[in-house]
Image (cartoon, rainbow, N blue to C red):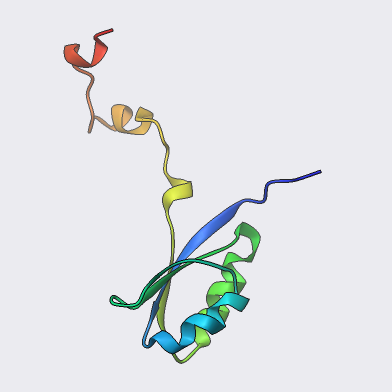
Length: 94
């Protein structure tokens, strides 16, 4: 059957737009900003380290940053505990 594979986005800053076609062999290219020279590339979670190392060796790549979205807690429990976010009476209205 179909099995979900955890993935992570890599933000790849490039020097020129010529390298965009060759980035397809490293993962799934989801977004290309030709004006700001960056590419959003999705790779499998277990391949992030190896693909990042391979991409940083390319001459046309300035730097590679992983997306931090999977590491964030979608609820506000961390913020409530640290005191950054406090519930008010208006928040409890139902």
